[in-house]
Image (cartoon, rainbow, N blue to C red; front, top):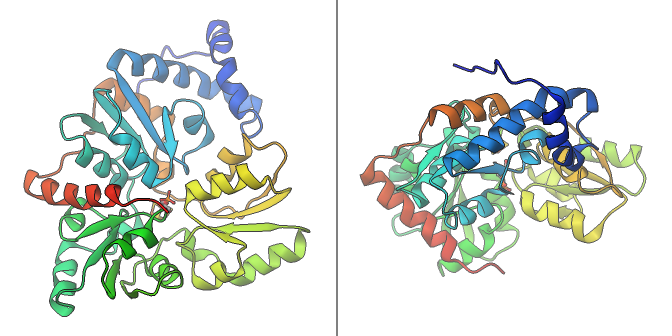
Length: 336
Ligand code: 13P
Ligand code: SF4
């Protein structure tokens, strides 16, 4: 039950949250702040009381990303940083597979996902039984699972990867052929970057599969000097039309390092807002595809989670031990 009674935008809360608002004022209109500020203030207070930490993915909305998150990043950074926290409680502002990964790496901690319905079309596209069938069909071929999979699937594979380390993970196996699942487009992209033969599953991200190469060319026609940076979950014709391809964290670094005057980020829409908040010199052209799963996480349900310490992520011990091994193997692969 969400009870936000008693949370009002008082002069004290306005003053206390002003420095937080400064971080996002370029992307959150001033008229909206009185609605967010009391929640932001209460979440930050309750975090201290609970010794909790909030991990937020790059696709979270700016009031979460800049307002209450302690650790932000791509799936790889969130998994790696989850191993470093000494908090008792982890709130995952992201989707369910990310919360499962945090739980795998912190079995003794309370891991909360504010909405258990925050899924992922890639994670939904494959089951543990599918992986067992693939192993029968390709005996001896190692299996790499994108972290966008359930713990059940991670338990059946040799190693995990993210879009930030997929090529390094595939090459670390020293095999001539590798099965990569479930993202067909990420697998195809990796195949262009390595001599290892890649066998792909046909899962897709429902957000990135909607972009087209024609759409990118149309944007180039409308905006001069446009730099196009795309996530590898996009279809091959989009990646061919892009100037740079990388994980969400690599996209953030690209803008910070190169400071291009005008950028098209071909990925989930909130990410441009979060980067724009810190990049006043860059104009962001936004083709706005939202991830409906990421958007299920709100300030209101984060607060609810911290108050009730629910919903908690639980993974059956027999599955967790094997799934954890796949994630830990990934974390041991050295970045290039
Ligand atoms: P990153 O690992 O690049 O953050 O991507 C995760 C994701 O879900 C992209 O859609
Ligand atoms: Fe899954 Fe795509 Fe949403 Fe990422 S953006 S969580 S891959 S559906």
